[in-house]
Image (tube, rainbow, N blue to C red; front, side):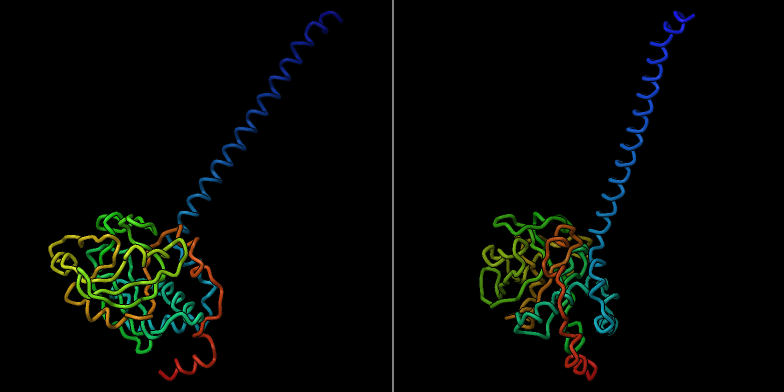
Amino acid sequence: MKQVISFFKPAIRNEQKSSISMKKLIIASSVFFFLLTFMTIVKHAAASDDKKFPKLLTSDETPAVTRWIDSLYSMMKLDSFGLQRNIFFCACKGYEYLLSKSMLQKTDMLTICDYSQSSSKKRLYVINLNEGTLLFNTFVSHGRNSGEEYAASFSNSNSSHKSSLGFLITGETYSGKNGYSMRFDGIEPGINSNVRKRDIVMHGSRYVNGQRADEGNAMGRSFGCPAIPYAEAHRIIDWIKEGSCFFIYHPDGWYARSSQIMNAHFDWPITLPSLQITTASN
């Protein structure tokens, strides 16, 4: 009898080992599946956050900031012109940041170039913040290597023929091969700091006009310049030249993470008591 039992012991041990190995395999598979699912969820959540990155800035929306932005946004009826409130908020944040650093010489003007829209839309907005008026809403081109109808790829590199994102300060004017033109200074390192060296300027263009849009065509594309309709170029440039805030927007996740301005924490000048009084009186 003892011999029979001893005979079956190795078989029992092997069966137990096999059972333990199977359990380990099941546990390992479950852990792997959980981690894979978790990573997928995180990846999709991050991608979603990238597309909606202005929501990362809601901590900056104090009551004074919210009142100011909502008042201007409603007063100018910017939603009816296709500009979303969160994009306007981003532009206002950059404007206020530059104002807090005394980097603006022309403090009443804010220009927004909204590259989230089709080039067949009027996606350039020139705003007088002091008056609360939308001065111009017109077409604007993007770089030929940034995309076709929609801009989707951006660069700070020379000869890339792509548009740059972020906050610029308008510079001096000159007359060149495209007529009356205006230079920019990019103020975001690694994002748009090479725009002057790249000769990224605002100028009028015959390939940017309402007729193309009426015919269902996208605007012509530039070498990276925000070109505007030739008939409006001189007036727009004269309004915004020499030291105003110019914001080029796209819901780009890399820009959202990299921009020091978009991620800055500072005291908005509009929240200061002296400016609140001035704003209320207007």
